[in-house]
Length: 169
Picture 1 (tube, rainbow, N blue to C red):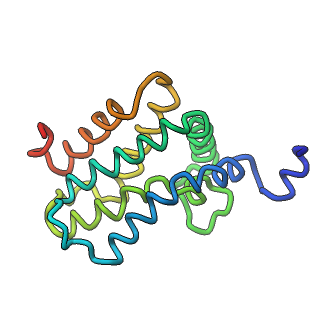
Picture 2: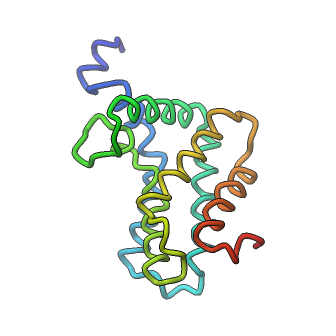
Picture 3: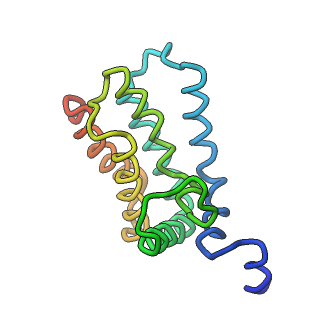
């Protein structure tokens, strides 16, 4: 396919990369949305443990698809610098909107904070994009890193902020 043909279907390279990346994270976002919709607080698993599991699942997907993850990360960084703003839901070119990786963690953190089981500050809106940015940056800049050390790093940062008593776990 020629570049001209691609641009007939996608408004920018950022959107194209995000459209290809979105199906990789869609199952993780769907799992979290289903858990929230079902009021899946009947499980004995606490939010901190669920958060670590979700970070692990995201790290595995990102490591397994390292090249595409690095391209997505570059598209996000480039687009964020260009627009100088957080993602807007109506922006059809924003890779953060097309493939909302932060949503993989957002609802889980928000529910844990609302239940008082995770510290309320910083908010999920503030913390989740930061955690995801760290994860994506590590994928792009440390090509030999595997999912488990990446999980420990990001989960340690998340729990250090949200549930410091759990960090040693």
